[in-house]
Length: 235
Image (cartoon, rainbow, N blue to C red):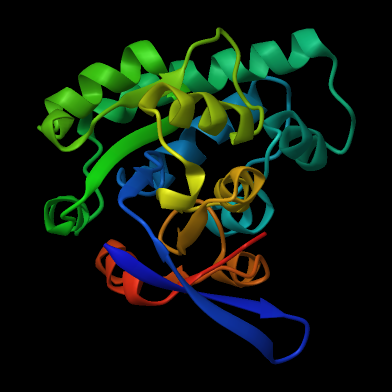
């Protein structure tokens, strides 16, 4: 599918050109999966384990960032030792795992996946051995050429190197790829390889923060696909 990219440089200056985008890389948590409420619950359980303050969904959407260690340090008001962060990460995932079975997909996730006529894949920073059966349980496996999650015991780092490995495994050129996610980190990952990106405002990040990135921001996943006629470039 041919899409039109618009790149905004400086104040009101732009250039337009056409590229071929044939593949979508989807984010999972906060994008296809509507799990913000559970993430906030799990984050609060993690913070409580070290005597930290509770956060609201609005605060999470305003402040969350990667690396996640930096996010925790900001909330706690102090730097973290590696062992402290590992403990916070375990506490988060213990609380998350206790509730994720009841979490639904984003309202229009199925329609968005079904409407795309090219190829698709899924790249998540959730643990791979939990991601794969969850995707299968939601009946989504057939939509994706590849599903990749985090293959490590402790997470929290940037997505960019994982996107490189993901595209290499698929044998794709980044110029053929549109990434759809809900965080600044998704846009940074796309920019690092030269892929296009659209950001979804219904996930983990406040819309105002997303709008500062310089790529299109949409309020529904269906709108993300409609923008394949006018996709912003973040370089």
